[in-house]
Image (tube, rainbow, N blue to C red):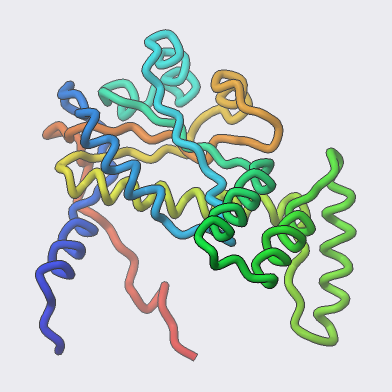
Length: 239
């Protein structure tokens, strides 16, 4: 068995210590801690590096009260000193693709393959119509081609939603681990009213809340029970 480095030992300890906390102390989250954790979250991997996420920090007391209601008055957001909505965006791909290309150009390393990838392929994958018909047609064409050779999924609207939520969830997971490294905890929540949440946050077309995240220092009653993990052989296999 290989010997663990200090870095590996620290990471595995943090992963084990991270728990979903449902009761928090009133201690505020310092701004510098928040900034460092957000910086780490933004380093998370994302599909085609398009980073389709937004962290909405809810500070307005009235909006916070309404957000608690939208989250069904769960104990986590009620007691946490800070609540964040982590949002997915399907309509930011053009802006982010252009930024990537401009940055590569400024660095003097822009290649034709990169121009083709972010300038042509990404709009093809992400472009949808309001009714999702274009996405269905693109997916059908790509599925037919895949019968004869490997072919990328040209993305229906449902596929696009899954892709943006997967990338955003990676950023959220990184953020939660970063919080734990700073001595703070979190409670990710999928249980909320998505329509009221979208209205409350005034989200544009193509945006929706992936999860709410209550954060702070855990109270003694914050952990409800010892962690229960299903056997590894149920979740891992080799072929």
